[in-house]
Image (cartoon, rainbow, N blue to C red; front, side, top):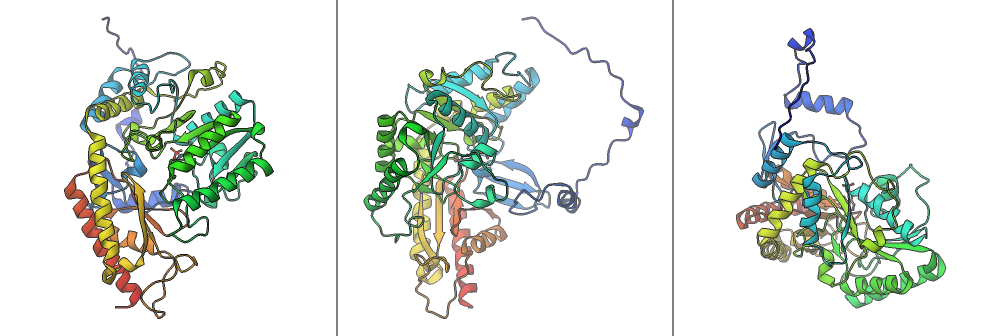
Length: 475
Ligand SMILES: Cc1ncc(COP(=O)(O)O)c(C=O)c1O
């Protein structure tokens, strides 16, 4: 194989002998961030991450945190997984950017080969890679509209699809993602999602009733607001993420499939958070045995490198004209190499068995905490989720459905128990996330976590919940 070498001969500036004195102290970094980085970013804390290995993160002020966020479902094999890191280094030393409109690269095409073996259905055989989840959602909108020659899109109440303009227009989990930025992309319609709290129904409501209500809402929508013949796509998260970690009932997914088949609507399944073994199947949609027409993925399949994608049937993708999809960094070769290493690991290890076992352990532990009513369990309304997407919904004084509790009228509930528990966890060096407009705390750890790490998390969670309950009860 012929070798190539760089012939760069640019002389360094004389001033380069005095390098820019870059800041390293925690306080200094925080001060610069405070002054020069947009306030539009919400941040859990102003801590500065320095190092990450597995589920451990080290901050510049030497705090060692147990990470149950995995950067919102991204570092699925843990921080700095050796196989992925090695693949990134090797690729960066070989070629670092292959622009997709200029040429192909080995990792890009091999990633397609790897992904083809993981698809929930062999009909999903035509890919496009982009960088972020939101961008992939934009691509899904474009393909659905181009294929069907229809404009309208149906989304779920509480659904989240991202923050870029089109993706934000599809988002229904919180107004903060688009407040004050309208008009958003038109032609988006919202259908009820079968989640008891969002439907204003008691938690004990049977799944059948919730699904019936959701079906009624969708049927009405298709008769009153968007005719099936005008509807390009229905977007669905198999487990609503930013909407509160609520798995979609299979009966409802099957109904969506029927409606899409009947009217030629494209069923777009957003697996950005749920995909790549997160829920105990390679893709969460597999729990329902429903075939998506188009699937969107990102996050967990490159273990930290920014890459996303869509996949659909060739027959659908073939509507796209050359140049209609693309982007400078689309399918970056280093990100592809990282994704190839991550998916290789997933294909060659019993990661699904591991996720299911660890999931059971977490659910069992959290339900024990919930049952321990003397130590704060009374504040918990529900423990739910799927695989390693697990949430605790706490009681809420602002909700007529969840404000009742067993501690007597003198005990006044705050409206943010999830955040109070999150703070207590943080004080004990456990990183967690909140989600949705309800007081929900969520756990989305790396898939490779150990039983001991779960025990450690449960012990911190137990203490934290106990402490918050004590504070609320004033004792
Ligand atoms: C289900 C879902 N869709 C879309 C997105 C947007 O992805 P990104 O933040 O990479 O743009 C996310 C991100 O959290 C998500 O969870």
